[in-house]
Length: 64
Image 1: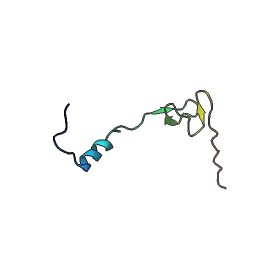
Image 2: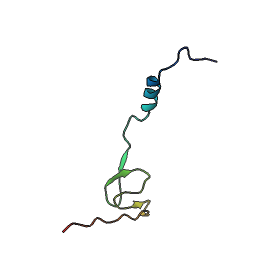
Image 3: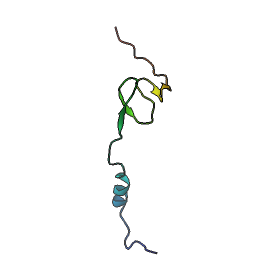
Image 4: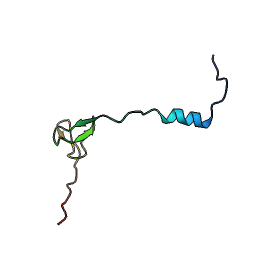
């Protein structure tokens, strides 16, 4: 069974753990409101997911 020859520093350990996510998440277009959203997640703008309303999104009131 192989064993490490020298102990790795905390800096090296932390650098290895910090670089696992190298790309941005993929955004898709919502079929209802055509805004960008994460795939497989309810739309934060209109609340639709899989052809139905999944989340009630409060409407923004316009200041007069």
